[in-house]
Length: 139
Ligand code: HEC
Image (tube, rainbow, N blue to C red; front, side, top):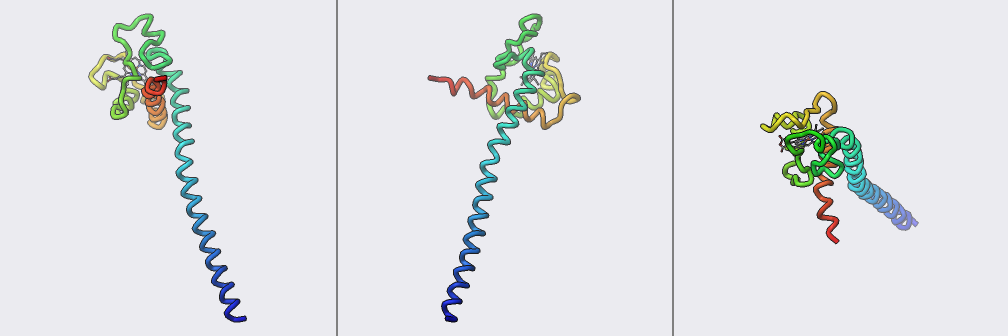
């Protein structure tokens, strides 16, 4: 009888451990799967900001054919679909400080007084998806 109850005790301890282990690993899974929705949120927010702030010059697809450019600019707004991932920090700096701070014309405005660094990151995330689109649509 004593041995039997010891076995039960051991089983209970093992069961508790199993529950703890499963609990920990499912936490890990939650952590990993939550990265994607956060990124999707960034891209969506970035798209919203892009449509308001960049679209008039860089155009809907980012290639630089926005309506302002079509009407009056001497210098073509950069084709944002051509930027590599390694150039993301250049995109960030351009949004924050304007093209003049990159030694170019002053036509691409600085947004540092209007939006936060976090919002600039959202726009960069969105611009990164523009770059990937032509790759995806090779049917
Ligand atoms: C008023 C028109 C205008 C708006 C609005 C605008 N841009 Fe630009 N952008 C330009 C022009 C013109 C250039 C090219 C400047 C040059 O080469 O001298 C440019 C260049 C750039 C470059 C390349 C800079 C470099 O050093 O090569 C990036 C990146 C960029 N814009 C991103 C953006 C993003 C992102 C937004 C929105 C937050 C934005 N621009 C809003 C007109 C605009």
